[in-house]
View 1: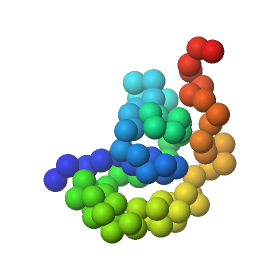
View 2: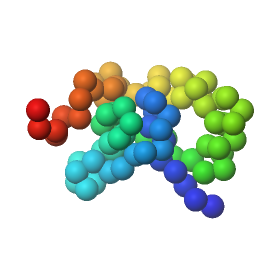
View 3: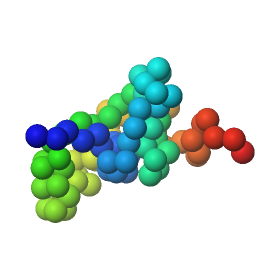
Length: 81
């Protein structure tokens, strides 16, 4: 069963390791979230939550665990202006 990484801020699965995993953080290409807190689940579980419209409620519960300094930044911190 395939596992997916889910952004705790926007619910996107377009998540990758930040700085090739050196920092131990993840980067969401959708909203710009950079942080160590990430949700990992089975792909089928993610699809079921999404289809049932329960993904938002699930994420709201998980967002309570995201430290303030890791919530959605204004822009990706490593981009050139």
